[in-house]
Image (cartoon, rainbow, N blue to C red; front, side, top):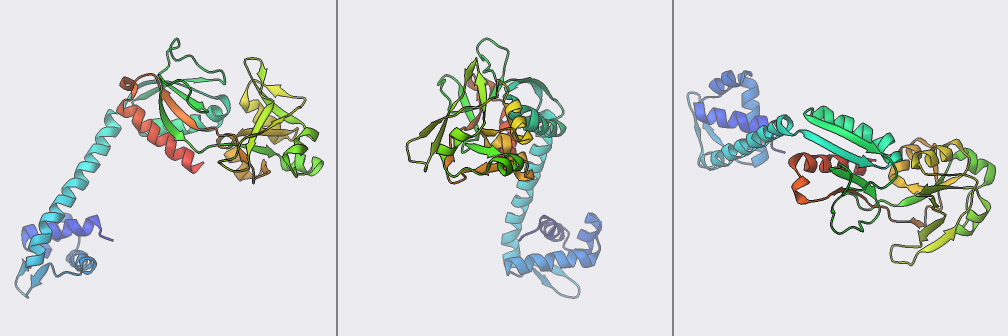
Length: 299
């Protein structure tokens, strides 16, 4: 693999016609400069310099390659300068709404990292499972689960392949046993999410991505309008939850929750970043989209 430092030594040596002069400019030893040129020649399988005891000159291949090396160094510098400039110039206020569980337990921490990289960004967060009205509330970005139904909004995908999963704690499974099939859910305490006083008690599953959904009516002694509470109940071992895998990724990784019926596909719950119009998709918003998408991929 070509190294930036080796290219730099080659170009400086060609400019000065001397390895020692290039080494002095770059503040390295002549031996290191010589090794860099030899390493580059080895990678390219070309002889870049014709050497004698008293002189150093470019070969025909070296003359030809020098133009490409200069261009490569120029592009690398431009990229570095653009990155530095971006860190200095990205900023402004972002008013963001997001769901409770994902927001509190994951996105807030991710935004801490983002703001550390781009300190001129000012954040105003709204964390709630109630769907924000982007037309009436002062919101720049809404982070939402589920298919995008409002065609007037612009959706920037963050986790398009995300799905729900069935989970329970190891303690709950030890007491009540694992599920053998979806029919077994009728015998278990199912922890249900509630939105606008409507309890989400019909859980959909798929044998494969092309299959029709199998809908199961579930019951339980607890429901909440806060998805974070539902997750906490599951971790505490009081029942089975059916939630976005993103919300549960840390708990699953740490062993606090285990996935039940892993061969069944859960309901699709893509995560998107929504804006009302294209004028809101600023360089800062695009950088945030790229950052959050990378975090979702690692989760």
